Length: 134
Image (cartoon, rainbow, N blue to C red; front, side, top):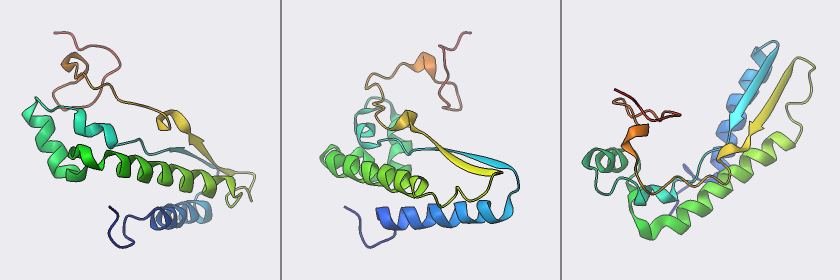
């Protein structure tokens, strides 16, 4: 599934660490609020009947449309989440009183609904917290 090292969990962690190292070195008085990546495996089930959703999914992540890839994608997502958590838990960014990195785990066990409710989606496709009213 992961070809080469570009999308490997180790490379994901390295890239995240590089970015956070820059923040740590350059930003005074900062709180970095880091959200874990969400599981993209269920995306194959979303928008099957909606041409626009299918088109966006095909352009952004074609592998996410293939239901046979769901287990591999789920495993990769969990590996990314574990890499993120282990980096932050390592204490690497706990060396200053005016800088910290926290993880928001709300996507860790999130499963998107497989039934698309278009009332929750605006014309720019951003998810809303309540149905859109005319």
